[in-house]
Length: 548
Ligand code: NAP
Image: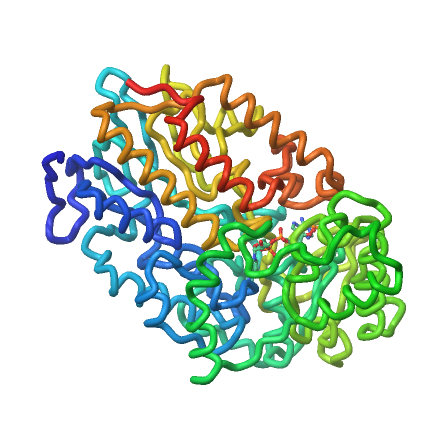
């Protein structure tokens, strides 16, 4: 074990040098578990975070209405029955405050806080080939020397905050949803504009519509929405899901999406149209993401299946929206259901029938600028506003890592490489960056096509096991070979190209960020399959990786 040179009492001595076995960036779901696992191995390890406290996504995304759309009883750590049963959820899809409290519960139960540093942003990480270690710098002036660098930065953690010309001139208040203040925002009597109707915008809009003076929603690409049902949980429901711990822990890691449910309705071709409709209708009533992730796998690949399910959802939306103008702006027609993230909603569609809500469709008339007084459209129309909420999304997958100056062998730059082509080895390593391990990174099932806790636990365990393997063999450095990486990228792309997902515009394909190379960011072979492949690599002694 390395000698640890402690930071000062305040934890942030300028120029301090800290020597670690492993450094973790991020204290969200993955970072907490990785810290726990590596500490259990006896490594000197610390986790750093830009945030002032733990939570990751659930620290930053405290906007009004933020909540789960994974069922609470599966968005869980599954390595400890005791930890699982020690927390009781109040409903099926709880809100951000309860989720944040749960993360604090985990930190306290595992006694993780003493090995964490907050309000500290990693700025640069350089691999020193001569000694096989990373030299990491922070905005506090810390210099950390570490054998292993593990990024647990989140797939959706680099918000697109500077989107429109003139943003800085706005005389009212402007928020991005992922940088929401901790103190409550008073919307009463205010003219509020929300830009974006992704999963985030939908949650904000449906939550604040009855709190604002007037709400103007700026919508570009319409969404297939599913109504969420979130029953309250009392002691009976809590006891009931806790009693299923072992069953859930065995099942969830092996399904297509890391959720409890899976594709179990047989092949599309084997069902009559009536049977298909009955199945779709029944699953739709579940009020969850099941219609997307566990109805028929063919919705991802077969144009006809995709159109049938898409039309089913459109019809449900038309029933609620009624008004042809609302239908025109809010119901998708030119891409298939589920070919990008499906949002759950609770009253979102009904909001547009309120007298204090105006819907602006942007498809033909985009936003040209933010002015001192509000939002201006390309046709010169100006909407006067007191508050603007940017629900404009993220530079997904790559953004969190390219915002750090990561330098691998021969001073190569991850930012520069990914500006050309986004490549990883199973989303866990990148060729040319020895001893850098990643969670929630591109080309793994992260975020887009999995229940995050399922995927992140599997990745955290794989990394911990790999480090244990290295230590048991007394090797210091691991690196993915170029050949193994090429093979993974080719496999990933072949699966992706066989689906309809690659044809749809969204952050899944990186098309929400100008100039970003196109590639499906999430592995689409299934969470269970991905796990099997990662496990096989470990069991066979890590073929495709070199050690020294
Ligand atoms: P998003 O899905 O990327 O949506 C961004 C929205 O902003 C889109 O409607 C987009 O329109 C719009 N937009 C961006 N730039 C624009 C511009 N220049 N002009 C007009 N509109 C613009 O981002 P998000 O809603 O934050 O969601 C991101 C992901 O976070 C989700 O897909 C989901 O995975 C995750 N999330 C999860 C939860 C949960 O689990 N409960 C909740 C919220 C979010 P276009 O589509 O036309 O580009």
